[in-house]
Amino acid sequence: MISQLIEKIQKTKAPICVGLDPMLSYIPEHIKERAWGEYGETLKGAAEAVWQYNKEIVDHTYDLIPAVKPQIAMYEQFGIEGLIVYKRTVDYCREKGLTVIGDVKRGDIGSTSAAYAAGHLGRVKVGSQTLSGFDTDFITVNPYLGTDGVKPFVDVCREEDKGLFVLVKTSNPSSGEFQDQLIDGRPLYELVAEKVVEWGDLSMDGTYSNVGAVVGATYPEMSRILRKLMPHTYFLVPGYGAQGGTAEDLKFCFNEDGLGAIVNSSRGIIAAYKQEKYAEFGPEHFGEASRQAVADMVADINRVL
Image (cartoon, rainbow, N blue to C red):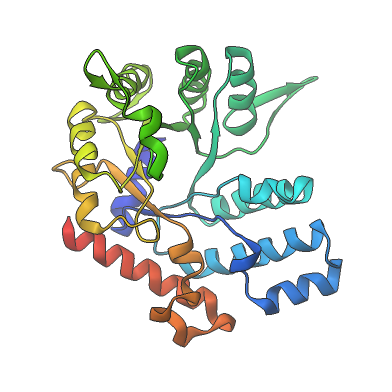
C-alpha cells in the first residue's frame, strides 16, 4: 500500500494530505441552511451538511493531492448519522482515486485490536460472505499497549495490502508528558520508534514499510532524530500551518530522495475561506479557496524540499 501512496505523491508532486476534519463552525451558512431545510436541526441534518461540505472540498482538490485524512471523531460526534457520512466520504474519496488515511487512533488488547483492524482495514466474515467495513487504505494506531495491540493491525496490512501510521511523537503541546520521558537515558518516543521499525519489517513494500509513524511538525529537532532511526518508515506529519509548524520545520521528516513523509493540513485547507488570505473567495466559493490553499501549501513545501 505504501508504494501506491508514493506513486500518487510522485505523480502529483504534492507530499500532502487534506485533513477532512469538519466542524459545524467551519461549514458555510448556506450549506447548513439547506441541510436544516431538508432534515431539520437534527443529527441527520448536521451529517448532511458535513457531507455536502466534504464533497465540495474533494471535488475542488482531488486532482492536486494524493491523499485525504478524515478524522473519525468529527463524524462520531453526530452518532450513527455521522458514521454513515464518514463511510460515504471514504468511498467517495476512493472513487476519486485518493488514498484514504482513516485517523481513528485505535489500539487495544489483541482480540479487540483484531476487530478494529478487520473493521477499518480488513474484512469480517458474515455467514458465507466476507465483507469490508469502512475499507480505508491506512489508519492511525496508538501503540500504548505494545506489540499485543499493534500486531493484529500489522497482520491485516500484510494480508490486505493496507497500511498504518503509529503514533510516535505527536504535535500537541502536552505530548512530552509521556513521550519525552527518559527510560535508561532515552526518551520514550525513541523506544517506540524502534518498535515501529521492528513491526514494519513484517510488512515491507519496496523501500518503505506499510507501517509508518506519526511525527509532528512542531518538533523539528526530534523529527531529525527519528528520521535517522527510521530510514524506511514513512512519516505522517501533522502540525503544519494552524498548529504552528512551518515548511522549514518539515524538511527533517524527509529523506534525501525527497520521499519519506506526507504532511497533513486540516482547517488550514478546509476552512481556508475564513482566513484573511483567502477572504476574496467568500463562503459561497469555499471549495475554490481550499484549492488555492492546497496549491500554496504544495509550493511552500516543495520550496524547502
